[in-house]
Length: 191
Image 1 (cartoon, rainbow, N blue to C red):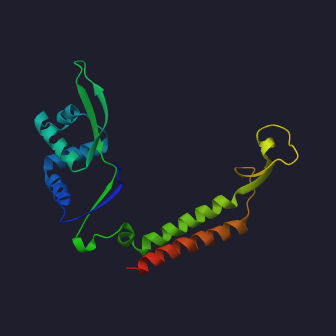
Image 2: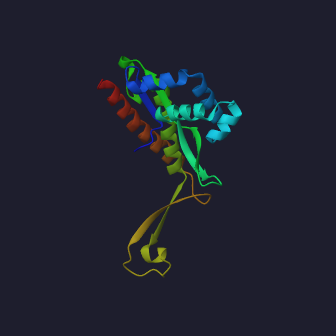
Image 3: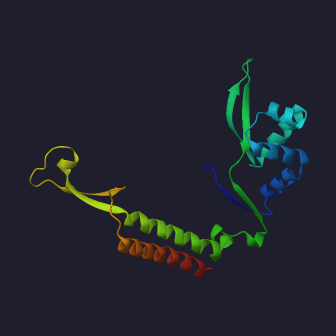
């Protein structure tokens, strides 16, 4: 099962209703707020919030079923019992009306997507701008002296000894931006 980092639920879906019920509970919300400060065991939660252990366990089960927390570690007590540590699930959960349940691209819109495309394009351009192509033979690469007829390899070297080519940065940035913006605009126009 894939652990999704961004989840969108329609308000009509049962999962959205379950999440809403859980976060309406003052005790579940108090536990979630406490876990946001750092992972804890059920007994630590019980002690810090002065909740009975049964209340803590009940709310932990609700929070876990709703996907709001997860058990991330465990240890064993002196008596050999398994003790789990809980922390908030690292994901963004969006509850949206049925008509607004769209893909992430529509939800983020032009004001977010276009800057993301620009940043990706510029980063790609800079990566290729700080490169140095090194031509070597396969035998030299392996550490042996070059032999006639050996295949030539091109290696991409990035680092302090690499050269910087502004023209490559501009060209790659424009090319990547054009491709990503074209894909984005084509996606928008199909709606």
